[in-house]
Image (cartoon, rainbow, N blue to C red):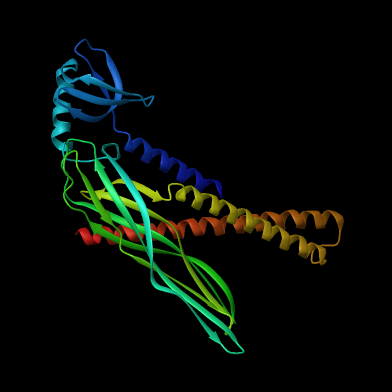
Length: 305
């Protein structure tokens, strides 16, 4: 039963991948064919991406009459549209104290240390194409870890703070500089009342849109997306290990069938149940994260309307 959702997801991903690669069979004037994706047109040269990933440039006049008409029509529709291949995005993080570190001594009780910092991201978008583009929007998803401790215990969670902005006109061969809104992080260490708070920016994911379509998504630091994937894998292993440990503890406490064969069967059933429960928890977390991303995109689309 668990195989079907995974199989469905794989098939859906394959379908989306095939749709994103807009391959076409092109013919030259001699009738020879080649399957490729049309990337851009500059003057009399068409840039194609072949099935093996290689990029090649071919004179438009070399194509058949119907393909020449297709290339001309494609260029009229896409000449002002920008893609990830046309641009380079540079991101730099900046921070400063909005409240400098301060320490208060409480006699016979302890001390209270506080501070507050503001973080934002400075970005530069370089356009290497001959296209001038208007209507570019940037969406920032800033991941902030919040760790708390008080008399009731401790907690840790990651909050995603989203903000967006409309960029100025991106000129041909030009560049734009812009920055995210500032995000404040507080720090508190209170030994007098046995409580603490620490907010930390762990990474940012930014997506650029033009004409309502996604151009590119980039993270800061660059390995942040991989960090999230690795963290998720570690959490999955940890959940499974905890479930197995609880299962073994139950067995040790004699909560299983005392007969040899029956106990072995119960142990196998319980272990499978724990693994399924852990896998379901991971799947639910992924679904929640995807739902949050979809909600952010929906907010963005509503703003556009």
